[in-house]
Amino acid sequence: MRASEGGIRDTLQRLLAPPDEVMRELGGRGERLVARARLLLCVLALPLPLLAAASGWGMGWIFASLAAIVLANSMALLWLVLARSWRPWLPYATSAWDIALVTAVLTAFALRDPGAVPGAMATWSFYLVVVWTTALRGDGRLPLFAGALATALYAALAMLQAHRSVPDALLAAGTDGTGTGSEALRLLLLAVAAVLAAIVVRRMQTLVEVSGHDGLTGLPNRSWLLQRMPHVFASARNSGASLTLVLLDIDRFKRVNDEAGPQVGDRALRHVASTMSGILVENESLARIGGQEFVMVLHCPAGSAWERLDRLRRTLVEHPFLPERGQDAFAFTFSAGLAAWPQDGSNTSGLLGCADRRLKCAKAAGGNRIVARDP
Image (cartoon, rainbow, N blue to C red; front, side, top):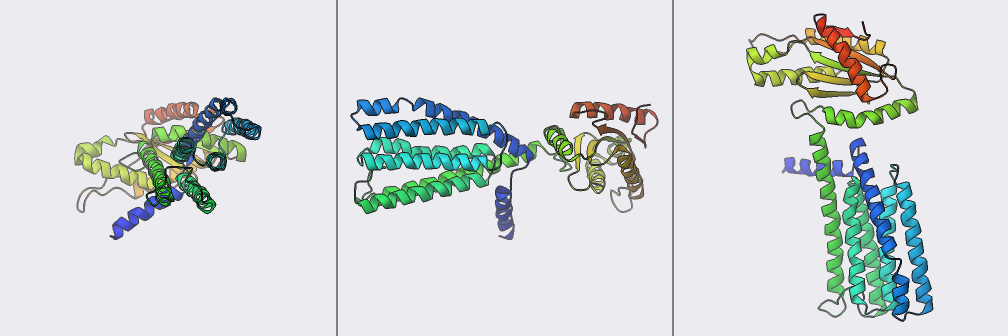
């Protein structure tokens, strides 16, 4: 029971936490996609005032519908422009606008023609569309916000309808003749839609975590590194901080697998990864990019990075890996190549290429050394 409660608590904490860099990037793309779809729907709605005129609506209603369509198109265009760059408040603002717009149209149906059930039914379904599309934004808090807002506004509208003592204009009445049963069902559907959208977001978060992390050590992998580095460069550029990328390879690691087997080799690799993680400070990164190769992103100049890595090199020797009690311990060394940003490269590819060139120099010189400059 406690394990289950812990799992639920952990899921809720992750779901309600702000999205990380990768999820923000995915969410930004989703916001732009929704913005384009919103603008397309608004453009398709432009002929509606003409249809209203052809249906014999009064001039007041025709002008009101025309003004509403113009406002909807203007706002849709504004949301599309704002979606070009990531803004943490934008998905909440656009979702609230969409839900308010659906509510306004439903209110117009109720005031104009309480018996217009088919049109109101089609309009109400857009509540579900708005809630479901929140999953594209990659923020687990957004579906719950949109679901709660849609439920509150629709419940208020339903109460207003009940007090007006008119037929249920939003869907066919319930079996009691007042529409209460149908309204309760629709409120339940909104809650279910919000929960399902939140589950989809959590599933997306899990897939991103799995695809961006190494299954053996739990460290980020090459894919995660390539996605994160542009954000690291932007942050360093804005703050004026120093960056050093380190490409590191464990010397003669294959002997562990040959002498003790692959299972011991996996444990040894986790031991090395844990020791290397110990030198990192806040916002620094360690990633495993394959085999016994690792990448460090350190927030310091190359000279300071060299000193920290030299201490790490001595630490690995002083704390060897012991497979089992009574067995021989494995003391590891490593070779590393350093590349400073932006002097040695302005992007990830350039820095990795420079660091790899210097790593090869360290290997060619016998290993167990750190190279920070080209020979």
